[in-house]
Length: 146
Image (cartoon, rainbow, N blue to C red; front, side):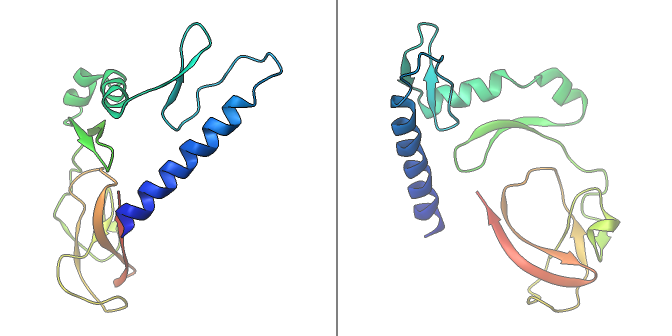
């Protein structure tokens, strides 16, 4: 259901951006919207494929710097855009709050929202996936980030 809603939101945003882009009659140079449309060097708008967006996201990453920092370049999120994902030094360490971790303190068991719990520090800096965080020793609401 979330996937369907997210897709509808993206499609709606793209349609709105196209409508606004077509209103550019004042002679101003077209701008590149964040919805997947691109402006070529001739000032004409064209569609950019997801594959092209992925290639661009990979090209924008300094892979050597990522690797040197202990990271790995990989596709992330619903659209599979590339990012440098770096591990946290305290990954897996027992925690009761994100103050105990470089990243977030995540639930590792089946505790319900509001229950007292001990979790584990987040493995890496990827924001994607489904998880519940432990805040001040208690389980907070779960969230899924696409």
